[in-house]
Length: 236
Ligand SMILES: NC(=O)c1ccc[n+]([C@@H]2O[C@H](COP(=O)([O-])OP(=O)(O)OC[C@H]3O[C@@H](n4cnc5c(N)ncnc54)[C@H](OP(=O)(O)O)[C@@H]3O)[C@@H](O)[C@H]2O)c1
Image (cartoon, rainbow, N blue to C red; front, side, top):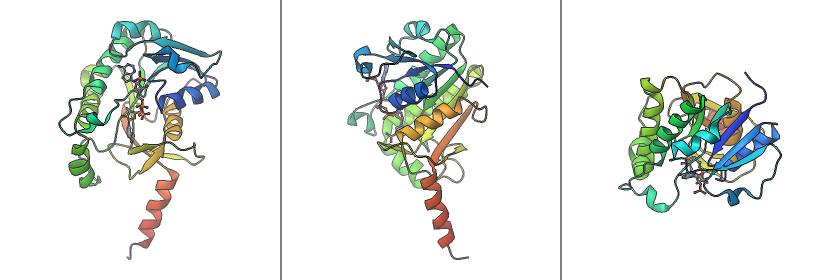
């Protein structure tokens, strides 16, 4: 496993992507930030940072950004309340995945980490209310994240070493020092995690093969403590 690397960050000017960029630079990595608007990155200057303009739906434009990188991290997402409506039609997650995988193959890169939400499909141990009641309320976004996961786990894409990092909900808060807990699958009892902690987990996942080709639900130590104290209160 490499200790220093060159990563491309898609959605680098976003609220999680910007933390990935910052923390990667702090770790001594070289970073290629891929954004639609290069001016949106002008507040970060670093000798190891290159900013590359591209729409990630344009696979051909991505190829030149990805040449020579060790891994691609995508924190791309959709914006606007309308996208959350149950009848909304969202395709950025699935279409971007097809575009990025194509560009990765062209560039000879095979490590990919991206983000999705939890409980996109029902699985054992998962709160039914989240999958069957809350997630449908997120309409097009949840459906398209699920399509993205289907693409990544499809046999035809078995050459791509992906990790889908799945926080339950995100908040603007400082990085914490505690462990970020992770479990393979759609759910791990998580609550709201700070974006810098998600960025920390994303970068950590590039330094281990533990989460290779996995969907990984994540939570923080705070969630873990709350859940343990709830369990202690249950009478035997
Ligand atoms: N909010 C939650 O509670 C929650 C929970 C679980 C997972 N997630 C997921 O976590 C991820 C990160 O969330 P966030 O809140 O940090 O995201 P965010 O701040 O909304 O950033 C989204 C990024 O995607 C970029 N983007 C969108 N379409 C693009 C395109 N066609 N080409 C290039 N860049 C494009 C945006 O760039 P522009 O500035 O050019 O638009 C922006 O940098 C998202 O996938 C989100 O769905 C969110």
